[in-house]
Length: 347
Ligand code: GTP
Image (cartoon, rainbow, N blue to C red):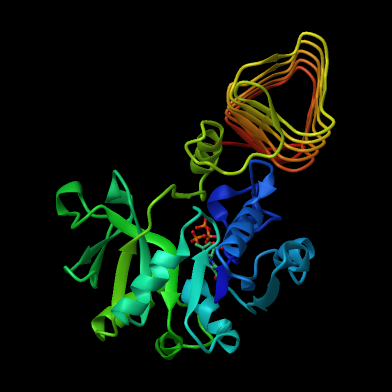
């Protein structure tokens, strides 16, 4: 079974973190999300991936190469211009001559594939859309289905009383190659807005099946942070790197703590991190590999990507620092998203 990973969007809502990085490469618990996803799918039996990339595609290629290190094969379909979610699928047509899976690679979930594949085979449609159930469907495209699971229509951002269900598109599809006939070539096409409605209109057979388990779109700063808090609370049971050094505090290899460091769980610390005297870390702090935290720093509800430096006495709350960000001494960072020194944006 081949999987197409859609990883070419601009990730505008997560800027400036995504200025030089495809959103699916943003780390979740100190590892690029795409790495977690590929590892999970390999464990589900997938050994061949096609990466539909465009924005900063080199970052993905440099990281994964041909996939050998992960025990899988990875090929690349890089778009010449932004082609949208269906345009990216069309651009990768040459790789698929059988039923295949498509993932929005920025969705954080670890779905079980076998039940979805069985459902798809039993129903015989041209497309099966994995669905997730949400408490408040009013900001999503909600599906209406018949008793057999066939999707009758999508209702975009319905008012609560008009929502036909609480089921939304989970960003994971099983598609038959017939789908390519429905996607025009050489232009931007959205699968959600154009291709699926057309398939439904033509009665081509679009079905939906609920995929259970944790599901979250990491596309905005608050959702990105929430995924981390869910990992730390173990509501999202992503494998943690490191060992628990006290209840709710995980630390990697070669971590050095100064005198009087206080951890307020939950906290995750990567490898080779140094933390200065009397720092207070947590609650809800994720610190990447090779970070340097100065003396008396307070860091809560914040995420630091690898190699960030926070100098003595600074205070961070509700903030995200991109790779190698340096925070000067004695500063206060509240709701800040910084991707390089000097570039600060309020969340
Ligand atoms: P925003 O700019 O913040 O809306 O993010 P986005 O466009 O990167 O993501 P969106 O949630 O709209 O897209 C869902 C998934 O499809 C993400 O994994 C994107 O990387 C991917 N995607 C969106 N547009 C394209 C595209 O034109 N080409 C490819 N290859 N992938 C895309």
